[in-house]
Length: 420
Image (cartoon, rainbow, N blue to C red):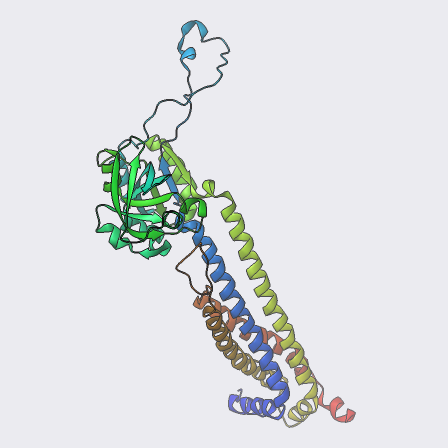
């Protein structure tokens, strides 16, 4: 029966008597795991921020009426021309309504779908912004502001004011940052809105919106859905767009095709609208994990070399242990115990150092117009990375200890003693 107390006692003595080698081996594990934690936390945090730029501002599925030419031209309806090849030039788009037919029943249907996280209605209107002698063309979008906050983190893009202020103000408007700067307007000021029909409405600025894309911030503003419906002179069921967020992004492509056929409207999924998104995200993640795994492998080889040298220096001790009655298995367990002790100590120190460096990076100022609410570098503190780090420390030290200790198990004490 294995006497673990004696084995661990001898392992502890070996580690303490060769403190320089022990410290070197532990530091190899510590900095390997620490570098892994720091890198993967920072890189995945940065990747998540870049992904959120797309995911937050783009619905998983966008429903709208697309203006397009008629599939059948009038000439095709003429009986005498049915068997002829008709060539029609300068085809004009067919007259179609911008609003989504039966928008409210469609919204109710979507919200009852278990795959749908939420569906938000929108009304897009082309307008003119008037402030004194300044008159600028732009877009005003009517939204359900609190639903947008829940589904798209809309409040992350407000650099002044709040979503609640718009919710509680019937004649309120969230003005694009570029528009506010151009017209020298701020929260509390009033801006006049002129529709393409010539009607003018005064709106109170309750917030400043900044998407990070200058072309959008120079023309875009938001108001409550009912406010824009009133400005356009339309009923409460007048909705031009429906944005859908799903629980599972991967279902977007298939569901968009189903909704398009079911309701007879155009449905665009996020992968179709942002084809470069998935490619860029996959490349960044691949680079992150490739570099992280390389760090762990390099640390593993360093641990192996140090433990291998440690056992080589202990050959005389191995011979004495075997000569006094210790079996080859006992000798192997002694050196395996040393390796795992180094792995535990070095691994946990590595986690602490990795966490401290991550916290340090998290405090470094970082400003980007794309995400105005972010003030420091993004860091991902996902517990899974720490679990991977300590698991690799234990597995790598186990393997690094097993290979040389297996050789020590087979050492012939007589040959070692004769060699001395």
